[in-house]
Amino acid sequence: IGPEVVAAAVVVLRAVGKRFGLDFDLREYPMGATGVAQHGDPFPEVTRSAVRQAHAVLLGAVGDPSLDNAPRHLKPETGLLALRAVLGVFANLRPVAIHPALLDCSPLRPEKLAGTDLLIVRELTGGLYYGEPRSNDGQSAVNTLRYSRTEIERVARVAFTTAQSRRRKLLSVDKANVLETSQLWRLVVTELGREFPDVALEHIYVDYAAMRLVSDPASIDVLLTENMFGDILSDEAAVLVGSLGLLPSASLGNGPGLYEPIHGSAPPLAGKDVANPIGAIASAAMLLRHSLGQPEAARAIEGAIARALAEGARTREIARSGETVLGTRAMTERIVAAI
Ligand code: IPM
Ligand code: MN
Image (cartoon, rainbow, N blue to C red; front, side):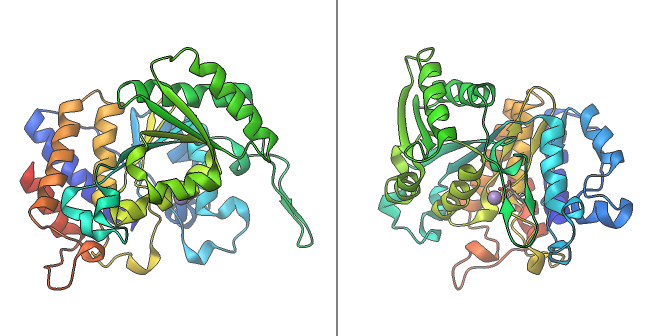
């Protein structure tokens, strides 16, 4: 569904551009399975050089079951990890806020969810995803979990700074009762915390964090964690809003930002005009805010999404029985109309 949801986000970008007098120079490049089909590489050289020169990169989703057993260098996921590494986007922001209109879409009770507005800050270019050595010879397999002080400090700084502009609470998630990397994580975050006396810092273990996310989500403001824990906890957090298809992300470093919905490529839905485009459209809003310095345009998109939902616009996975179901394109049109 990557290409479909990106197309939807582009339609919305053009609409907001029209309203705010912004002209985007949008260029499209192959990635993932498309990259493999066209160039034998999930992150082809053409794409590699283009992203370095862009102000921002908007990505749909990668993943293709036909490549699940391909050698690692041909897997779409390998291309995505290389893209994140090339851009050096070490801080992945995943906001999770409940749309009031969708309170009953979550399996959790509405009174547990009310007031939920949290931000996951996931370390994105280190940890198990990138650690060397790594291997699998069929008898034994190895991955390496390594974090340096520098890697921890720079992502923690993003989390503390962001918390300052929110409710000034930072929840740092680790497994310091077992892992050395987590002990260093906790130490570095604690030390950095002295620079941010106005932010209330709390450390919790990841197993308890998993529970806290569903038992008391409204108590969480900014949740900071390492790469793998952040991957897992962010899918769990999607349950709060009722659908993985709604959630956007921004990945930031010192160069161009990368913007992608947190959902995957959903092969069974691809090409059927049923996927929810909101995750991608909200990612475009984050792109406007964080990479293009257009906060008003970003808010216009976010407001339009909220309005469309409040007026009852529903894609299949968030519709209740009897409600009219919109396809990807029709949902996009509703959001455009609200802009
Ligand atoms: C995500 C995805 C990716 C990740 C996959 C596709 C490699 O699950 O962005 O959360 O694990 O980072
Ligand atoms: Mn994930």
